[in-house]
Length: 423
Image (tube, rainbow, N blue to C red):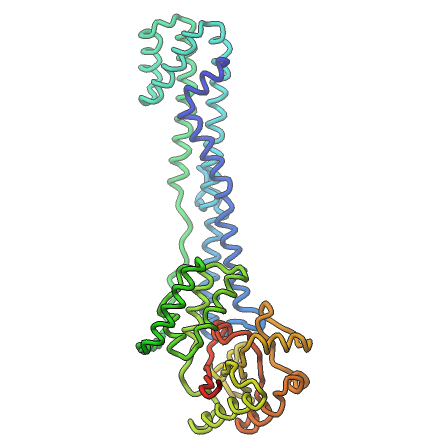
């Protein structure tokens, strides 16, 4: 091992952290910026496209999100360093990494200067010089006392003692510069955070307590055990209870979850989808019906028509602005300035496959269709039913096919109709 390696090994406790800090901060310099970009893209996806988040709540969300992005931009793009008036997180990391890199380089240069004259000395003298230099630094750098103590107490001789003194002085100078720069960086003010959002008045309905029969409780237990066997964790039992209590078939719930898992969704994403599904279930009369009786007649006609078309045991429901009360693309209230339509959801994987075989375009990762055209309705034997429902409701009625009611409810608020007469 040459002299330089001996010196570097003895001072590894000092040099290694400097190098490690520099290497570890290199990816951190970009993480915040990348995170902000991902957040921006997420917001953009929420407020654009056919399923856009619109209305007053969307405007408030975009305003708050913009304030956050602007604040994070100031953090990421702050220049940092002793000469800046404000430092950002990314800028501070960059500045600190640069200081550590320069300090490490200066210390290594000091070792390289000390190595050649030490090479002429004995191995014992080199080892003693390296050891004492390290000991002096570990004990707290004091170039006068430590250098003098090294020189005289170890009796290394004039040449070696002088080299150690020079080395300690060089290391001390690099250390003092590093300390001053890091303190200066830390003293720089950070940019201000975005203002707190103005509190919005929200009306929050307390969800009713779910009462399940012993049979339904057993179904929930079976689903939770099946999820555990499949290695799916983090699923809320309460969400499963709400789906079972609302009439969902246990097999369809489990099939939807396993389907999401098979599609590559994480356990957290699956848990969120189930939460949205349970939260989107509605037990109310859709907008547009003049009376509860008209709504009951519509529901009965839909289920009877599905039975007549040999689709009696598939899931059905109603979604869209008839449930939310506003048009999702514009935020316009239901029936304001126009006659709003009804979006009827029918859900069955075999029916969706049949639609695909007929050439009907699919959406949402091949989990649903768009509103079916008259041609598609005729091909599926649903045209007459759509016409009867439209006459009964006094407004256009569109059909959409999903592979599962769970997927429908996870996408948007949905009122589910359950056909209890099918076998």
